[in-house]
Image (cartoon, rainbow, N blue to C red; front, side, top):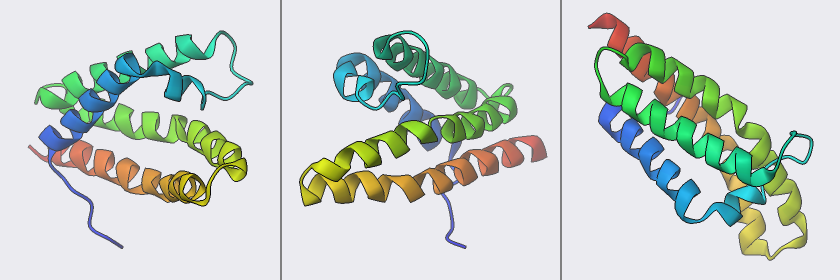
Length: 125
């Protein structure tokens, strides 16, 4: 199995950057919110950005790292349907967009594993 990064600071930074992206360019995230969710896509975009920011803060702090990293792993699983929607919607787009959208699907696995490792490492300290 490929090695996953273990740095909590890098994981927190990734989540914080994603949160900023949700706020700075919400339209691209609105487009991948599954239609079956209640409310507006923009509400989900902002809510997921807030969740990412909270997870980043929790992972950055040693006292909350274990629980926050475990929650991040669950979050990465929970947002997977948005990645599936992006891939399905990309079927009618250029080959480059399709390739990028489909390549994102398996990338969720290392994110889940990374968050799990950060949680386990935090529990060991």
